[in-house]
Image (cartoon, rainbow, N blue to C red; front, side, top):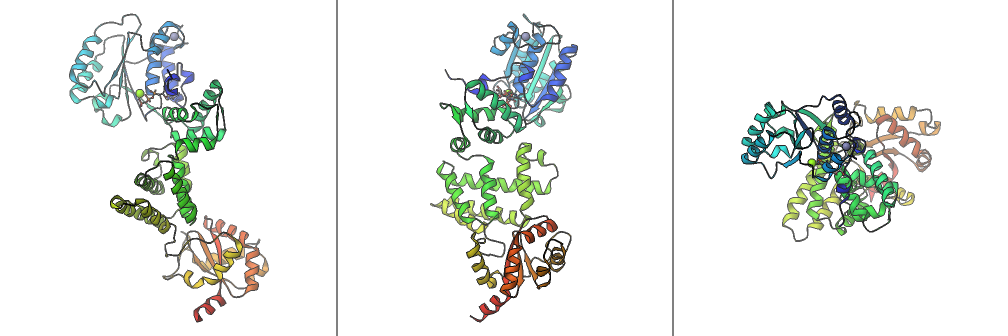
Length: 482
Ligand SMILES: Nc1ncnc2c1ncn2[C@@H]1O[C@H](COP(=O)(O)OP(=O)(O)OP(=O)(O)O)[C@@H](O)[C@H]1O
Ligand SMILES: [Mg+2]
Ligand SMILES: [Zn+2]
């Protein structure tokens, strides 16, 4: 029978446990010195190695190898514990055995010495699920544990445990495992299984694991079954774009006003089985994450995400303004409420995408890509572009006005004398664009030549990349006569 990867790859020794070096160090030292305690509390996100480590500690306490080499993973005891057949290691799932009776039974059995090992180890999984009377009963045992008894409580939610229990245990916090370590494990697994996998493919799975090795292994499992090779495309296909990546991408399209791309990505997600409302809900969650990251200095404690995913979000949070986040959340939650009752929820979300990708001023789609059309649009559109309210008066947090900012840009020595002197006004700076007003086509040509440079310097001054748009004063006048 096929056994899931995360079951066939349980770490048998401390070396095989990844990303928890701080815990391995403590436990290894205690085992080597013979100073292990009576009660441990293993806390941390799901699938980061709590149960595995509890078994490793149980092995270490009973292993037949000489002290200093425990657990060996190889002796009869280590094998029996791995197979779940060693009588002195008792695993209790508190989620299903949370009654007082179970604990009473436990307290009675605690009084018997180990049958064959040196220590009797009780691993209480999901310890936060214990009922209060059960927790109290356990407490009595924790207070005066008989010799040779070790309790290991494992939980994903330590805050739900009573303080009295917390204070009697040595608490060890399991970290989310860094992506690089998970990817490394995948490389080894693929090698062992003769699977040729693209680095990118494994990296993508690792990032979707979000720090949980078990989640990573199940994803890998879904991707590799039946095939001897694995590409990034395969992974995207198989995972059905459920990861954060799709929300980072679609948000980026919205930010860059690429409505078409955003709609296509949405369509693709739906075609891969994602449900419309779920997609919108997850997307709102993404914006919420961006919001938190903008306000909270160490968002790791608030967001249930890996360091790497937080880094990705942080990059996006840096280029999205607060009003924009607010606008998108309002658009999406509005769409969600409406979509619930609509026979065609998809169109409602699509409309929301179109609206989100328009600027705050209600400007239509972003600038077309090709230079030719770009020029035309720019020259023909100045009236529509002209801000209705006053333009963003302070383009940067230092409180600089457009005039001062533009002077700074033109003063830069890389700018040609011609551009410096031909007369131009910075009319408006929005999230993604800055509009420079000029008065004739010769000036236009001149600024076009230095377009990239100007964008670069403005970025240096404001810390944000924006595209330059030229506004021909004459065209504006002409248009107003039509
Ligand atoms: N740190 C790790 N190093 C190597 N493999 C790991 C690690 N964490 C988890 N795994 C893999 O995931 C599987 C499940 O891990 P384990 O049961 O120890 O996680 P857990 O933290 O107890 O999760 P839960 O909170 O859901 O009980 C293991 O069999 C192993 O394959
Ligand atoms: Mg567990
Ligand atoms: Zn051993």
